[in-house]
Image (tube, rainbow, N blue to C red; front, top):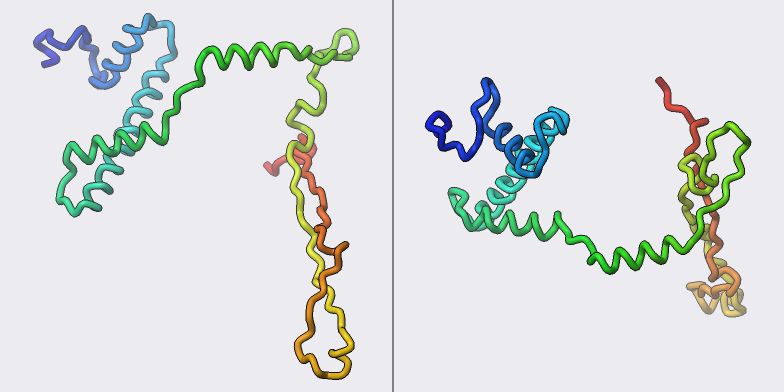
Length: 188
């Protein structure tokens, strides 16, 4: 079919796989010429397509095995594609919602930078990745206090009762943060 001229506008290039030519044709149909993208873009699209096909066919095989079928049928493939669409792809929010969010965010003025002349103004320290950017709250649990009652002393109550102390009911939280600065360099 490739040599009969019915390739749907795909030109024959020596040593280039058919799938690579299809990807190039898709890029061309979107208005990108041969020199307007890096050559590795074709390979990245091919890798993405192959990985997607392998994932879909693997899922279809699982569905066929679950249904005790000996081979994958089109229904298994349709189900696998539908599950990929439902769990992998999500629709972006409507344009109006994005415009409203952008309008609200753009009302907040940018912080003023205080940079010496001739230097590069950097964002405020809280907006950089070189300060602790997360915190963990670790509850400090104290063992429950056992209070003896008069019955315990006399020996009539064998099992002591736990009487919670109201100040101990509130857990004490310890704040822990980890610096992610460049000072903690990785070993080479």
